[in-house]
Length: 223
Image (cartoon, rainbow, N blue to C red; front, top):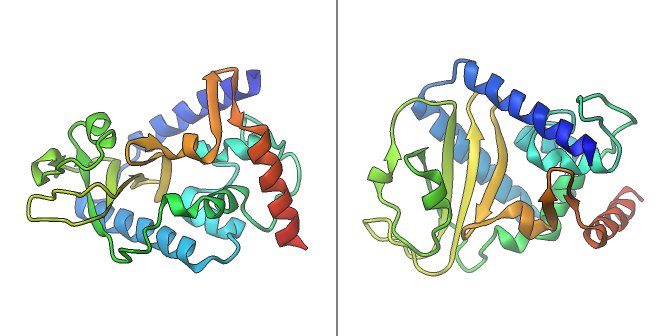
């Protein structure tokens, strides 16, 4: 769809703008990124409705250009130019979609995962690992706008060796102070696991069957 292409263009401009702004110190970003990832998992554990204010806290609002907000574009709440087209709901569509799939993020058998944050030297390679070794020297401890937060469920030994359980990855932006898209679970993008598709720049969004279930859930919550 043309609107999706325009959205992605604005998204790239937004990311470039974030990179141009001064970021906090590396240590501050690591602490903030880990804190926000931990808060998100605690929210999913609580199993309470996900409000729009909470979505803004974690991901920015529907008019902020972040990958999770494609759903609001698809539903006609916002335009590709970030203009609000109709009143927003009290509860978060994207947050409720996460709650529908919370088992992707949680491992009840290990309620206290390990958190590791830094600027990855090779994000693509690390993000596609499942059960491999994550070493401290794979993280560059220099200041940048972006950091990667890993959440490791499993037996963690001194060299950060991970058993074949679960590895989450979040990207944190130190200027916007939110988790931007490209979340991953065991090397697979969360967006794909949630039901989003991307056949081309003109053909992407949330699958119709998933969207119907999500809309039914939202109606139930709002009532």
